[in-house]
Image (cartoon, rainbow, N blue to C red; front, top):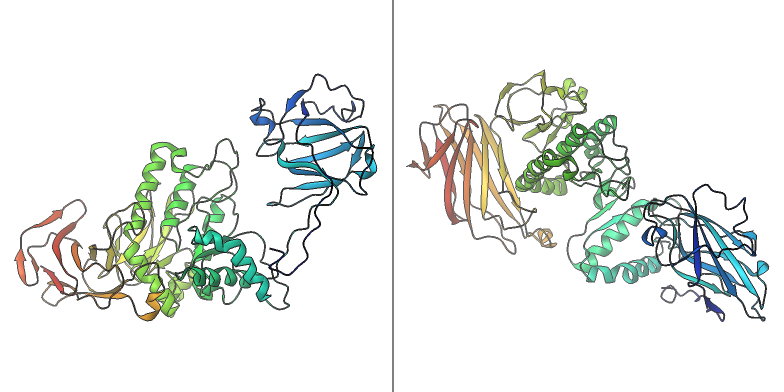
Length: 573
């Protein structure tokens, strides 16, 4: 790295003594070691137990011990010593005090993710004699002790960290090419640009913004495919380098409520992809109702991503569904499956975000800018044009919902609502308020293990109530940059209720091509109606092979696989 940066290499040690062996350990549950001089050169440690320096004491016979621990060793040094001597300790968990021949010695301190610490011990050692080295160790989340090497004495200090200035083109190139390029060649295709605010030294340049750009642009150039990073917001222009996350939040109801309003506002500064630690970051296991409401909000967010701190490393990640038993698994299966089903709908709106700067999550006032009422409901939002979401934000399960003018249908239950007013309803812990405009078209795919598990050769088209609607389904290969050259497809869909009460859904011929595009497609049209249709026809011909679900108030019509260039018409009365 230094060579590529044209910087001098650090000096190599001429004295390098491995002192990783021969250490002894003693627990100090009552913290009496300092008072009893366990660090003294002549202290009798014959009762202490041998200990290794490549793993914590918790993995060496003390699995549950979380108190103070002491390490001691004796190191014989030659009579002739170099001018400088430094004790290297690869990683000590978590904090420690160092003593050499009975005297406390200052040592370096590092910030994660750096681990190696060192101390200048030359003034405290005795040439040609045994030297007592002792550590008083305070354990952390990962246990206690000396975790890894090197454990050595050398005559040069460890080289300083290499600090990059990514506003310097050479340094930015080396940073990405040498450090990150090999990982991309091995298959890494996204980066989480976590941590501080970036690394630049140019006055007036937002360091987070520029760091995001360096990662994003190099990833795209190196792979020839679309880049994705998860970073922190770096001010105006950041929308070019998505996505963004809101940091290490606390797992509390007010935080969930704030995230809902915050995410809906993101589009005001052209940022469509805001991501949260679903369930919150800090804290141990949270109440199931709070967990459930966060999952439900996450499903109708720009990015659905779970992440949290390990409050107890022995428990692991306490945001996992099985922590809550069968009800947790059922909840996540319901909403994560729904998320994959909605990919055709969501992906179309990501195209709009790219081409029109219209966000996936839209405040009510973005759709109804002339309505004063739209500005009063910051915790509701449109999910695309067709769906309105009002997450439950407290433990009561009650939610006051405002619906703009028009007719609305509950996405899950099919219940009808008149718009232009508010209502209050109770939602069970596995339910969430989502509404669809009458006349809307919402495309889906079959449930799958992940978003692109199979080509979109079978499409579910949902039509809601009466009215008039239009939807242009967008598709591409999902990976390459060919969409910028026109390699994508649009399927225009239109729906209308005619004056005679009949309904017609038209699925026009697919326009455009892209690599891997299915040449044929089957359709399942789901008609969400108030009453069972009297008759159904496909391309003008009456069909009888359709199904009515009285409980869901939905008619399902299957259109067999056909060429994607052939238009399809489904009508009903």
